[in-house]
Image 1 (cartoon, rainbow, N blue to C red):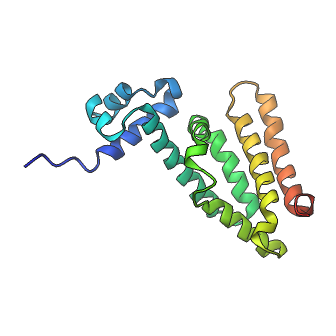
Image 2: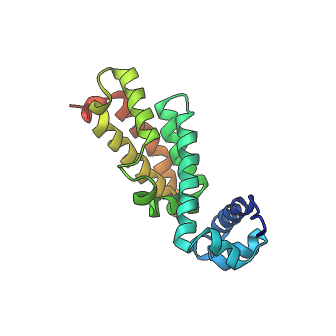
Image 3: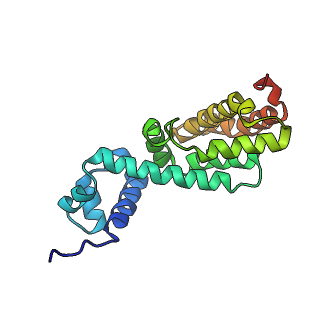
Length: 183
């Protein structure tokens, strides 16, 4: 009888990969380094993740689930989008990895719980049908993603502060005036 695979190995590998990504960024995310960090062997990592792309995809799925859960649990739309931008600033390497893989992880043909939640919140607030707010949803996402990406770039603290100061009033204005993107 073949030995039973350790059911927790994949979780250890993902946690190790996340630690390396957080500490060293994308360059630190090699399968050999992940194996060492997880206390396992490189072949064991390859048994669970065919290559670095597969490992990155698994991490991106994990981050997407985390961000969506955080946002959907927010009490208001404003707080949800602030939470989204805050996640990016607090976890820049994870956020960049998530968006490097966004077409695979958040593909438009897949279920999109955050989109559904935002549209239902907009209907509750303003009336109408969910699809009436599709353009507003994408406007909110693009505004939030732009702010988030700018906050993941290290460097000029003054420029980053402009983004931090500008995002909330822009978000609030858009949510107070949905007709701008809701004909």
